Length: 327
Image (cartoon, rainbow, N blue to C red):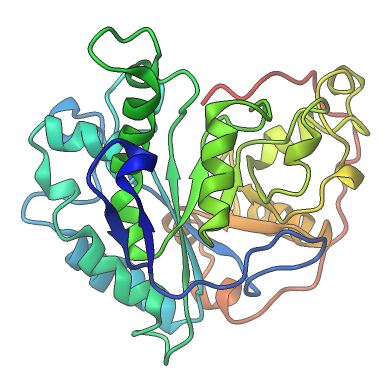
């Protein structure tokens, strides 16, 4: 159990009771559990703005129904890590925001927050996996340029409001016992509010992931676990792409786990297997959108019960010029 005092947040004390977590992956080769991460793209699964771009939880749906029908079958087949991308949705045609849970409440889309903790806490605690904890990563949007956190906001004193809103945004996943991933956080200066929040979470025992490859001038992030699109990981690799050398850290400088989301989505089963094997051969963890792989004819058990042997990678050509993550 962890508590934040009124002095720390500018609000009444908040107490979180997170579930058990696997150990944080902060050293080379350390992985919380073997096997891939099951990736659910929640916000962005619909083009309906009145549903905050969420398609997974349809009419009459709930987080409990989602867990029972979509998550538990995968857990029974061996999955032990799950990533929820934008679980509280986001506004269309805008950057993904960090305070999605607050916006979901403001938009009267209470079905995105109601029952979230009670549905997910048993997953994290291991109730469906014979007591073995499951890591669930809550992937939230950008914090550093979220307009609701800008110091220029005239309605609030900047420092206490900023921190209070951050904890309000984090409360549902923390109470469920989840890890936290922050979009576009790999260039956070050491003295920035974003990095101070990362350090605060880590001091409370929360595993925090940055996205994407850390910048070369941010060595304080080199020990952090990283989440990146698979294609961006390649284009941002200074060893493969000379255009990335002025910007990004080398692979050998990074000491945390590297999670690579299988994007862009593969078009064939052969392509999917080849790319997954490449990620595994690099010592990294693939994050997989299972319905896409199922549609290509790949069964869940092939990925969750067995680790296929690495296949030769025929594509050794230099990657195209790097650019900053656009998410």
